[in-house]
Length: 322
Image 1: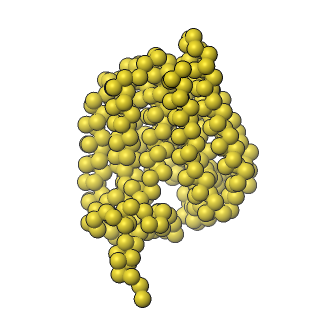
Image 2 (image 1 turned 90 degrees about the vertical axis):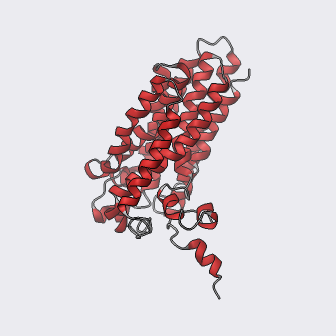
Image 3 (image 1 turned 90 degrees about the horizontal axis):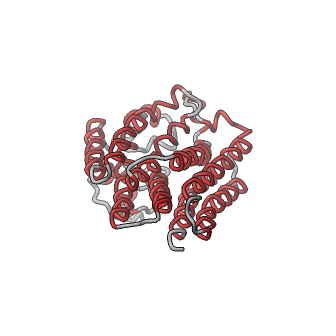
């Protein structure tokens, strides 16, 4: 006999969510559809939005040689803001993609196409998340505030990119790595070449991991006419990904050099340069295990990019101590 409690836990679960996630198990039933809209049951997206913020902040503190209480708040504020803005962005994505999602096996269980929430309810939820995130942004330096407001254009455009370009992953990269610029500016009050190179490195990384992710849906995407780099690269995916992997590592290395070369501490520079080196090794491991025709492997490797990003943050954080 089926356990009725288990039925309650899994009712409305999204197909690609981790089984037994906290939303399905512990969140109040009325809140679950909204948390699913925000992808709270799939936290990898929050990590991928947050990690470039931490990179930018840590690189900025290495550049200036200081890490204070305000920087600790920037790190925490970026964490909360990443959760909220990722939620708002995903809600907007689900609103604009509701008809497409209904036609794709992996996404038809999402809250809007499955009827768990209405479009009007989703809009209200999106606005609420964005407003709270804006309150956090207002505690940062004015340059960071302006950058944060400017990022809204990228968030608004991204869901439509797959309708008009084979490179929607570039638009995702532009939006998801904006935090590298914002967090640098929150610490320094300005922008320089180093955070721009770090931002470009993140974009190359996003194209790498989101192409892997997109291979899960390539057959459905082809049927409904949705474009992606997975469809564009096809059987040539490996050499393309290898190119973006190398580009991400080189750009990150250049960013570290520009930020730290004026520093007189060679040990700090050596540790910080370990970040792009370890980052590259993690992506090389992903390439070794990649099977573009196995959706489960693609999803596993995509999720592993949280660890790739954390490795970078760890090296930059350790470099603060010498």
